Image (cartoon, rainbow, N blue to C red; front, side, top):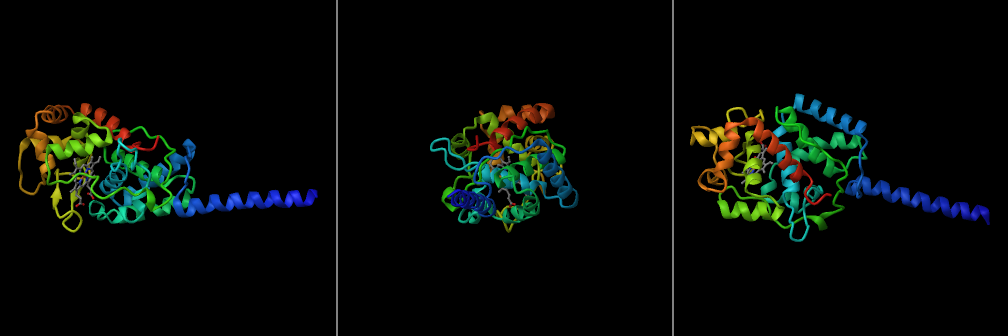
Length: 274
Ligand code: HEM
């Protein structure tokens, strides 16, 4: 009798362990895991090592933004839940080029099975910004991974660079941001560039696309310049009265930009997660 009970208990225990392991392998952590600071620091260091040999910081920032930026405050769907790793979301036009970003994170994920993909994606972005000279952004772990494609949001939740203020407000207000936050987050285009084969646009916004500073705003105020990119959604930050004063503030004072950027980015990185 005792032996049978022990066998049944052992069987139940092994079944639970099996399903936990499967959830880790297939669908990420599937639960909220708050990481130990020590292990988070190890992951931070591995990300820094990656950025020393592969200057993919802009790509990582775009990956994290596209994962979190699907959030809707209306029905609480989307957000920083790593649903970007599943089809159909990974194949949405706006996400062109981002599979390569996820692939770069796999070796780190393989070494740290307790970190969720959703945390790793957001941490990769925060570390990328700091590594490029930007502000330190507070990071909290515990994002839960979407278990499968059912959590993918419909196409069209991210902004379209050919549109103007009404579109920008529709998209960012849906996430819960205001006008100042739209402007400050647009300043992330201080990093990186557009690629013809991904978005159809071409070129960088600033002269030093691997440096995070306030040059996105100073360039914007200086107007069109040969070789530098300005999307419709960038230009509208100058012409729209609700946006322009913030462009001027951030161009004038990098410290103000860094302080407000860090807060808005933290909010973006936690959409739908906590
Ligand atoms: C305001 C609306 C926005 C529009 C219309 C927009 C559009 C775009 C487009 C078209 C690209 C080029 C993609 C490519 O061809 O590789 C791009 C790149 C990028 N975006 Fe945005 N974006 C917006 C907001 C943001 C925000 C809020 C962030 C981050 C917080 C961000 C971060 C980036 C980064 C870092 C890149 C460079 C990626 C690389 O170099 O590979 N963007 N964005």
